[in-house]
Image (cartoon, rainbow, N blue to C red):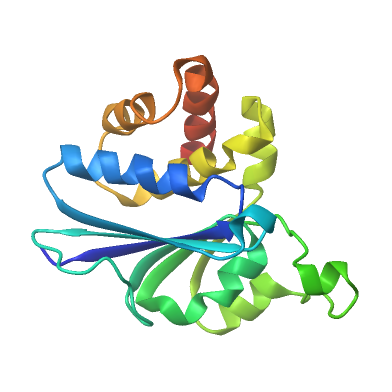
Amino acid sequence: MKTKNVMIVGVGGQGSLLASKLLGKLLLTKGYDIKVSEVHGMSQRGGSVVTYVRFGEKVYSPIIDKGEADFIISFELLEAARYTEYLKKGGKIITNTQQINPMPVITGAAEYPENLEEKIRLKGIDLIAFDALKLAEEAGSSKAVNIVLMGMLSKFFDFTEDEWLNAIETSVPAKFLDLNKKAFDLGAKA
């Protein structure tokens, strides 16, 4: 099997590390060789956070170069736009439509770019943009955006719902299990 590449991008504190852990556990149970690499920006201060998940028969490096990502999963719209050059031709971006102002916007040094969804699509990119935050809140917590996004991603993998749910069960504390299962279901049905 040819190596597949998934980039998970977001802002510190959004749960991208849990999303990569969940995906990694699922892929391990399916027998893939997996490499996961976490690249932190100023994650504690709301900076950009990127996680690479590479899987296949044999994977030698955890790093995804420009033009190699099969999927980019983005927790925030500007982060999706920031990493478009990493997407391979025919790849797909799945993004939450939430907008989180980066520091230059907060300080007034810059403005949040307008019409980002349109600008991404004009590049010929297959973009799925939806309000994952609203679905996470419907599930019971705004912190479940990561699991809602994994639910949407699940539509593009040949794994059963039970396999995904087993990965969730081994990745989240028991007291948050029902919430996360609901968030996954809402994302998968979005």
